[in-house]
Every structure is written in C-alpha cells, then in structure tokens.
Length: 197
Image (cartoon, rainbow, N blue to C red; front, side):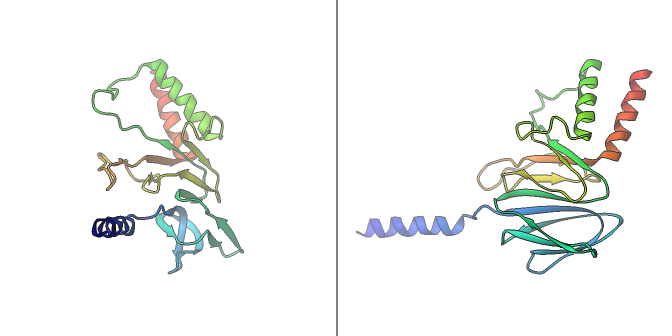
C-alpha cells in the first residue's frame, strides 16, 4: 500500500513540474505597440522603427487595436505564431543546423540559381507549404509557424543563433528566420550582379 501511495505521489509531482504546451505570439511591427498586462490586447501605433516582442497567451485570442478600429485574432492551438504588423510582407523558413560535416562550404552556380528561384517564389507566396516549413505573411497576417512552443523566430534585423542548447526534454528548438520582401529583393539583386561578373 505504501508503495502505491508513494508511486502516486511521484507521478503527481512529475505532472505538477511539467509545463503544459503554450501559445506564443511573436509580434514584429513597424512602429510602437504595447501589450496589456493580461497579454490579450495590443495597442499599435504605426511608424518606421522595427519592434519585436513575444507574448505568451493564456486565452484563445488577442485583440488588436491600431487606432482605426479593433479586431480579434484567434489563437486556439499551442505553438508559436507570428503577427506581422510591418508595412512589408515577411517571408521565412526553417533553418538547417546540421553538424559541421554536413554543412556546405561552397555551392555551385546551379545550386545558387535554384536558391534564388526559390526565394523569388517565396516572395510572391508560391511553393509555401507546411511540408516545406516556409511562410509568407502579408502585412496584418497572423500565422502559426510551428506546433513546437519552444521554436525560435528570428526577425529581419537579428542574426541566427550560432549554437542552440537542448531544452529540458533534450530537444533542440526549431529556428525560423524571417526577412522582409524589400530585403529579399536587395539580396536577389546583389546575387544577380555577382553571377554577371
């Protein structure tokens, strides 16, 4: 009987320590925004300065007020979401973190052209699928990026982490890098000029 009681107490202690899956919303904005203390409302003032914040939701929605009105954004499932409050489209994808032996030190011109073609398609929202783990968010869009609530979303003006540490469960988080269409166009122009030389 004592073993049963102690075993039950151990299971209850483990259950109490584990964190239930969370709903996180990464907000990327051109302008200032404030998040309510309860985390379920955003007051947004459009501008030119880039700002980012991660909100952990307790409920199923966020109310966004941009001064011209308000709208509710629904977030019903756990995971990481991205809310684009920038003036430009955001595009991004899952980044590969292979070991040093699988990383490319050089790529061929054909591979470079294939990557440029993929980037051009992503900029107009084609070939965007859950299987490819790539994303296209027009201004005002809210989209689920990953079902994993420890996923990392890296914005346009931040670098990708050099290394990642596993979480308490031993899983390395997914990393998604996002840039604006304007930055993608500049990258394509630079690569096109390099190929002409």
